[in-house]
Amino acid sequence: MRIVLGVGGGIAAYKVASLLRLFTEAGHNVTVIPTEASTRFVGTATWEALSGNPVSNSVFDDVHQVNHVRLGHEADLVVIAPATADLLAKAATGQAGDLLTNTLLMAHGPVLFAPAMHTEMWQHAATRANVETLRSRGAAVLEPATGRLTGADSGPGRLPEPEAIFDAAMALLQGPSDFQLPLAGRTVTISAGGTREPLDPVRFLGNRSSGKQGVALAVAARNAGASVRLLAAHMEVPPPAGVDVVQVETALQLRKAALAAAADSDAVIMSAAVADFRPAEVSDTKIKKRDDTADPVITLVRNPDILQELVELRNGTAGQKQQLIVGFAAETGDSDGGVLAHAQAKLQRKGCDLLVVNHVGTDKVFGQDTNSVVILARAGSEPQEASGTKTEVSAAIISRIGYELNSVSPRA
Ligand SMILES: Cc1cc2nc3c(=O)[nH]c(=O)nc-3n(C[C@H](O)[C@H](O)[C@H](O)COP(=O)(O)O)c2cc1C
Image (cartoon, rainbow, N blue to C red; front, side, top):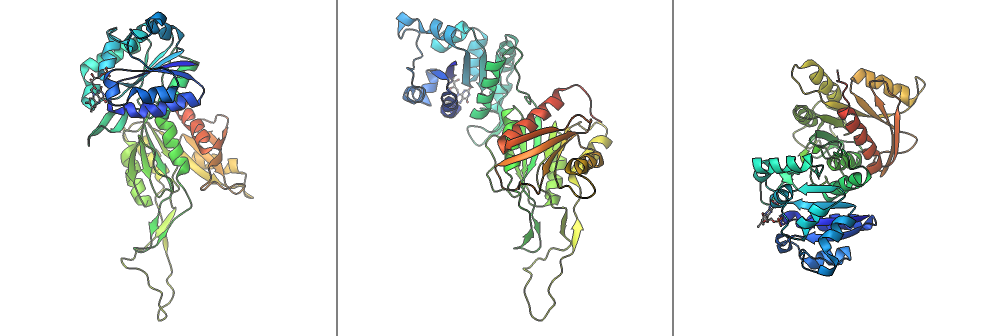
């Protein structure tokens, strides 16, 4: 496919080099049109070298080809990233002062804007009106991500991650008519990793969860347009860019963070491996190995069931946001029943909306890059299987969550 990639004059212009790479590696022919201001951030040599195509932003270069007409007609898709406040305003008012804005007026195919600017600029009435105008004309304008901006400040206005823009662009190429990212405008809370329950200042009871599945879910939700809050217990992988991270260690800390985060979330995905038990007593000092006393005995007490509490809070509190609550279960079959029978019973018991079931025992889940799950719904629909890399499994889970959130049936 032929893609025109317009680059605006924002600090995030450098991230668009990664986006360009994603397009070219997927086999697309990309012509980059950087605005004059953007070349103060990233020079044209970068775009020429990475795209393999000549770069200009003047309608008076190669006049014999009438570039704006040719590019506008030939492009299967125009992507503007970062779409600055200035470019959104120019596009909304139909200005045509350079090659990029001329090409936008000539474009026959879908147009995708990936905005990036300071929160005040994004929320300004003028920008809101420009975005509305562009959307009403059929352009796809992504919601910017929330997070760290140019300076120390943070808020909505960050350029969506290159992978998210890429996914949106590919979705547009497939079906531009009523394009919207499935989780646009949604807030999704995801717990990941394994909790650690301290015994003393140096020891803890932990588990083998790597956090890879939870992080892959966070990436998939982010790429689907959601604002993502990652409640990160111990993880062997770093949290992804473009998500808000809340660090937790114990089940009790995770409980507190999850109950607080749920209040304004559209979906809560509890994929962390949470300890069922914790030591009844935590020693302030290191427990010593001594010959003159008996070996210590560790007494365990139950941790609260966070998933069940989330459901109870949602169902029992008037005015509480009706989040979609997704649990994870690692099940084995035994003499009382198979994996699915146990999982169905758990789904009924917990009352969550979706339960993602790992069949443990036949293959290992912890630390692996692949996974195989069955998604069960409380409504009693057919179990949905998903397997492959944790990225692929996450895409299936997030897509199902998008479907559930966007379908009209109310939850209990
Ligand atoms: C360091 C710096 C960072 C900037 N970042 C942004 C930004 O992220 N978004 C934005 O809308 N404008 C930003 N601006 C302002 C734009 O560069 C300015 O509005 C310019 O006219 C945009 O031109 P364009 O139409 O080529 O994008 C920034 C300016 C500077 C000096």
